[in-house]
Image (cartoon, rainbow, N blue to C red):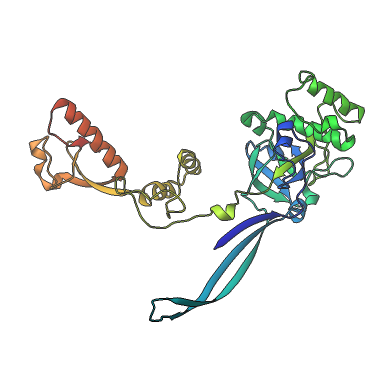
Length: 367
């Protein structure tokens, strides 16, 4: 029997929540931790879902993944004592001797966040860890406060998580003035039309900028960063999608019957998907040999016979039925194509032959 569970080292409750979340007791589930979030474009990298973490936050927010492997064996013996008499009165004397032997094997796995792990805020703003900096290299404010997580501002419009900005402002006010009106972050209230302006005006009363931005200093050079950076408290869910659980590699294995391509799925020992964007990245680097290896040799290589004169290809006997002069064996070359391309060409040729009534099943490829 196998039982697995995850425990977070120092779980905390959120600073604010909504009324529907309070009714389902969502804030009472301590599966999140508060972090100081910094929204800026670090090093001018236009990457939407990249987050930067510091080592200090990782050391004090370690997730413990505890796996319980319980193996048990039950040993029992039954003894029967049956006595008969002449009057057919049967008396049963049964004794049960049951012995249980249960063994527990508990394994503890400490999972530390690393590059490639996925994080998710309470407002469903997800992102992956792009790099981990030590605390002394992170930006810092006039008071010496450093952010725990840096996110790119381009992720807010694309994911349409504007409520995260409002929740960050309300969380910032709640830490300065713990009041009930800052704890309930319902988007639709009586003052919903002027809610953001009221919150920003209260930030001015506490000495902050109207937009909630602050002036930070570069941790590498110590110079002040010219742009204003929006920073405030927010909370993040515990790690779920970890890169060590998703790592997968394959050199050879099973292929599909139709396309002769590797199976899909990590659980089935399938191949890795090499999509359109991956292809573009390889082309930009000029690695044509690597591209040929990934998309052809390790996928579905296939050889066909192509006529030198007319460009037709045949699957049997190297014979072309289109031109009589192409029957010579010397007029044929072996070409490498993808099996899926060959299957697609045969399907298109079958459809053309079906509609035209022709029995010709040969098709032309480029010389």
